[in-house]
Amino acid sequence: MPPTSPRLGLNLPNIPAFTSSPSHQPMTMSTLSVTDLQELVGLLRKNPNPTSKLAPPRVGGANSTGAWTGFGTDGVCGAACSSNCMRAFLADSLKSHTAMANIETKCVVGLSDQSDLLFCMKDEPNAHKFVSSIRAFEEAASLCRNGSRLRHCAP
Amino acid sequence: MEAAFAIVRPEGSHLNMLLEPGRLTISIIDEWIQDLTTGVCAFDSQGALLTDRLPVCPCDQINLRWSGSAVLNSCSEALKQDFKDLVPLKDQTGPKLFFHLLQKLHRPSQSKIRVLRSNLEGLTLTAYPGENVALFCHDAAKIVREITMNFTKKMRFLISPLRL
Image (cartoon, rainbow over all chains, first blue to last red; front, side, top):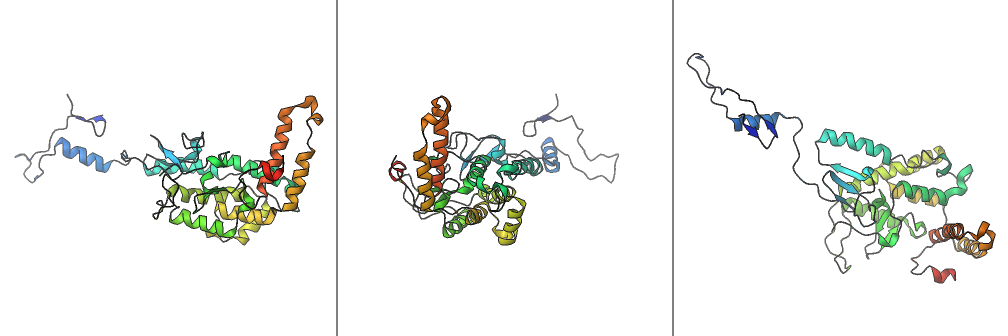
């Protein structure tokens, strides 16, 4: 039965311990126990499992995946409107960076894909659509509709 | 990102920049950005202001930067270039850029409110095909929304000033 490592979640193979042997005269290596090996593997792992829980943001919440921001689907920070509301992940930094890059791309796009609703100078053709543009921008920013319900979600 | 546009005032009131842009002033914006970078005012359960501020939220910092980019990307090329020249790079946050946007494009005024009010009063249900109430309400809501954007003070009751 191979020794198991619940911390790492894997079965470690039976590794013969390195011991000082009379046949290898210069060797002075001592025994490498399973615990030592686990620690060594833990240090060498590139993607350690983060165990800390993220604190909820000022406006938003935290779930098993990470922390999200915004007033949520119910306007009182009950649940995130979409995955684009995520601002931090319970993952290693490289994976978090990759995920956040995708979210950033979607969040900063604004109204650029709705050319008829862009905010314009007064001498440009769509200048009269200012109010519609604000409404569209509000939608893009996933703003809570009812202003009176705005409040801090986190203490 | 909406949290960057929902201002929390020191007296405990909230000001949604996108819903009531007429109430914004440069001092309110500067104070809000300062709050987001140093800690937003905290209140107890009774709504009283606490001496300690909330800790700086890293999500607010992200939202400030991203909302700035979102505002810029929501502008025409000419307007975007204008803002890039006008607003220093370090100040290109969502609330700041949105305020500059308002300064350029939106001037709240009582005369505009009067015009909108007369438009609202001119709406008649019989003018809509089949006296469609839903369409009527949709148009009325759009006008009311625009009237709200021209308020320069907090209006507790919308009905009263409009005399509906």
